[in-house]
Image (cartoon, rainbow, N blue to C red; front, side, top):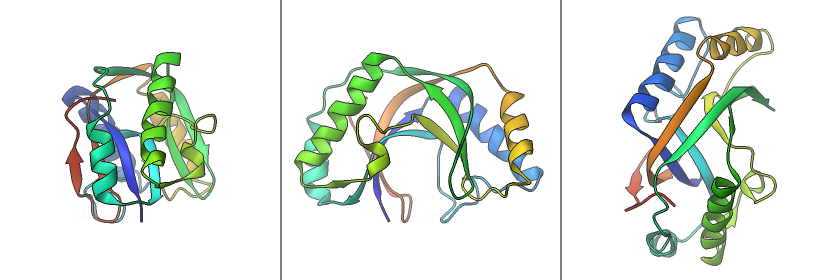
Length: 174
């Protein structure tokens, strides 16, 4: 699986996304509530490692400066290949710079970074569904549109093992 450096949402923002997931599940669309181990939480990933040394990544992320909470404006839905849909987020240049710095710290440990999280290729998003059919896409897009406009606040961060949901909280927000 993978190890992700994630910004985690504050409680009101997390509730908003979780309610969206619940509405989609009620409409027959699988979301992160029921995906794999079922311990997913709403998040924005800065970087995803495909190969890593956990001790080295923990040490590197511990040195990332705390830049404080991040507000993310959600502008719509983004559809990715293989039936993935997400909240389409816009970020400031400062947030993009924070992501680049975080990925550089991960890469400096020797970790292999997933190509979609390389600076310049990163599409900021909060995952909604990982198994949409083409027929379900319009319902997913409409369900997201019903909650827009939306601003999400990320106020803490963690490393997350996507295989089992284990988390290693960071002391700040990179």
